[in-house]
Image 1 (tube, rainbow, N blue to C red):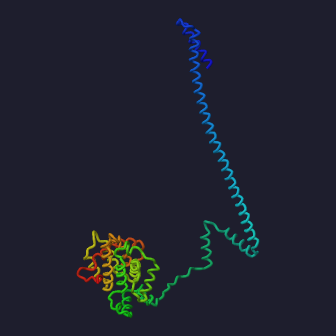
Image 2: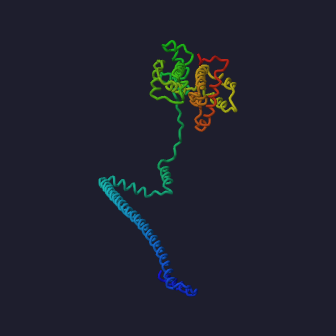
Length: 379
């Protein structure tokens, strides 16, 4: 600032001298000097303010950094302490396990130690490349020639047809029995009303219960399952010959009807007609009533009667699908596993045929019974 002031003074004096101004040189010089000093003072004040501001910001940042450093040091101390504690515990446990192992080794008698020694010596002879092959060679030398496999034959006391007929199931239960056995048991029952029926009484009773308990307007009927204990209770009651259903929920009667159909030893659609049913299910664009008519003509009469009642119930449910959320496809999904059973055992084929089984069941319920046949399910 001093050097700048001196230069300005010289410059101003030279200019004034050259112009030959009448104003006194000292007054001009003093005036310009005062003006310059005031400007320099303002600049200096601004610089000092900026320096003070920068100094305060620096101090604030330095304080934050010091605080972070203190926290980091505290965390490092705590972490170091935890690591030290873990290391101490690990050392204690290691010493404990080594001591236990040493005690186990010491407690072993000489005979066991000898067996261990022999075992370890044998394992040293094995190698990853030849141990299995050498073992097989040694065993063949030791055992001699491979004996010939003799074919074993046996005779069952019962035929497969007799077992499937359900005659070896619980004698007083109408579940897991064929339709023929169920009808035979009904005719031998003391209840005259049951004995005179031309279809299994359980079908009529459970369908009537679903209807009377509001099942037709119940959302998810036959899709939503009831509690197993409730189904088992009603099952045992009917097995004892008591067909008076006093349940409060239609799902119990619906669940038991599904169970009875699925447990039939021979499905409602006989196994020998399964392939033909799947073939009908594959028809495009839609399955005709004539296809179902020709197919059902080959089904036994008793099976047709049962299917008639189920199909009639399915149509009643579908009429109220906006309320119960069960259209014919949803109903078929529920009943198809009991109506049809793949006689094969290939899981891939079963999965592939499942959609055709559902499609066939939809057509069966839609077109059955035929217009020229009495609708027994409505009586």
